[in-house]
Amino acid sequence: MNQYAQMIRLLKTPDVMKRLMRLYGQRDGMLVQQTMRYTHMLKKHEEAFSADGPVLLISAPGRTEIGGNHTDHNAGKVLAAAINLDTLAAVSKRRDRKVCIYSEGYEPLKMTLDELDMVEKEMGTTAAMVRGVARKLTENGFAVGGFDAVISSTVRSGSGLSSSAAFEVLMCAIFDQLFNGWRMDPVVRAKYAQYTENVYFGKPSGLMDQMASSVGGLTYIDFKNDEPKIEAISYDFAARGYAITVINTGGSHDDLTGLYASIPREMGEVAACFGEKVLRRVRPEQFMQNIAMIREKLGPKGDRAILRAAHYFEENRRVDDMADALRRDDLPAFLAAVVESGLSSETYLQNIFADGEREAVALGLMLADRKLKGRGAWRVHGGGFAGTTLNFVPQKELDGFVKDMNAVFGEYSCEVLDIRPEGAAVVDLLGAAGA
Image (cartoon, rainbow, N blue to C red; front, side, top):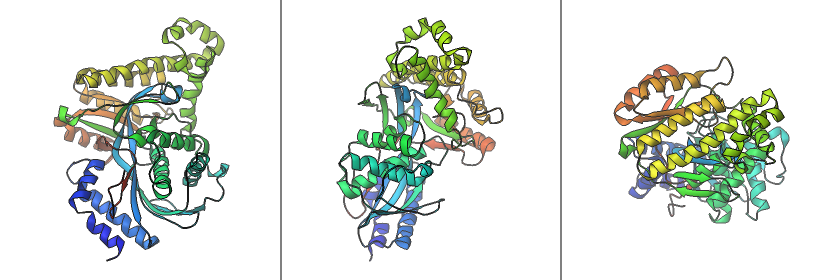
């Protein structure tokens, strides 16, 4: 029996099934779905590469942003969680420095790691993410080398669940596992992934996406200092009768980089009025007492920047309120803060509408308001402008909520999420379970 057949057989053993339940949750049909997915990937790897060395399965999750909308890039606070959707690689080590990736839905990628400088025409591509991660690792004393990988992702591109962050974290994990003995700290891994996102991929972002994917679980993160303060928060929403859902309203984030970039830029303009680079260095009361001065410096076109800064300061407070509510098991207070966050994003941050013709996010929020008011919570999810909304739905209403949202936005547009307790992870079917 070759190693591929042996690994496929091992997928149905108790230890492996337990491992899969930890990564993907315990909803009906999950084990069947993931076993089929892993089997498919192993067969694809055998067909493409037929490796004579070990084949590992390495996973990096997507993330959900629960609180802290557009705060991380200004050294703010967030409440975020890794989720049971992931980017998964069946990967084997090569003896040279070539990288070969077969990713479902994309053209095969073949490249070499001999040259790691940024290639401007690669920005926004898979090659840029591989090259950027490899450069950052080598600069910091980690080894890199070639590999063959088949990759599958349930974190859809443009969905607002951080598909690029999951891929970047996955690349860090692959190099770490294959060439460094899995010794990279999760926070360091997140920072290297963010560097790649900003510099090589060309997308402005804070550190929240990569941090949530790399660290795992439900986490309160304070980005005030270079070394973020991270606190794991244990809370079982399902045990309290609630499900977390995201609704893909049909818009993509892929062409909205300019809109995203305007938010940190405008917050930075307000901070500069006080001689600072980020708003976290400005006191909230200092900001409120000097709005006339800010408006004089920025002019009438700076009014949106002032509103966005007001959102920032209040959102930091809300993140603390959300975390405190979960710590003391005050679910009504938590849900109220989520709704308040969404209203602030809509009125002050102004990231609900991409343009006058794309208003699907606003439609999703209106429908959730009608269905969940007084019983659940809803808000824009992630970067905004297009993409997804986040909802906390009573379990007893979940089936009807999913059905109604799918009827409006399309089949499978409403996804039920589980919080994944683990960030980047290795599933070594022929050896130990991994990280």
